[in-house]
Length: 219
Ligand code: ADE
Image (cartoon, rainbow, N blue to C red; front, top):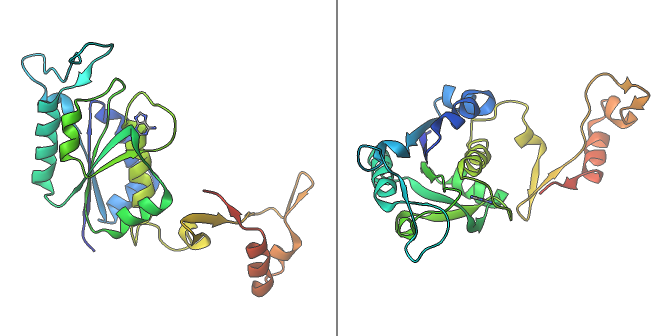
């Protein structure tokens, strides 16, 4: 299995420390399946103040990420991983769905995720980008949370990341949708709330039938 790099270009690399350092994201790295890294866009900023943004041509509010630092950061990432897919997070992008996460996981390619900026970016960056992705119809202040969503939803689908008795095993896919059934653990009764009897009897065919009847679309 090839080690997949996931490189995140961001002005806020510290936001990723916890997310990539715990739970399944950490395990994926520990198992040698994924390598996360952040690329601090500020390091590619211009001049002594490491400028990364500027006012828009034509006027208007806010500052846009300048092209030079973004191009330099993407080129740096591509030097590390020439085959990587370059993804730009933007509210204008194509909607991120489970089928897309699966497609990315199936491709044995690393990812470079560019975190967009609350006020925008110079459009020329899109010439370096393979996919523009939105995680939903709402506007966030930056692309960091979308980058985490994309990385998490892809990494958990990489073979070997989830081991043993995992949620991947209890999910089934139909038309790109995840079907999940309700689950319970001990105790069998809690504050008068009972676990369905069928799940307690160890009869696997009946349990499978019950689960099939109780699957719900979760996506
Ligand atoms: N940047 C701001 N809003 C976003 C969204 N919904 N998805 C991806 N990137 C974004």
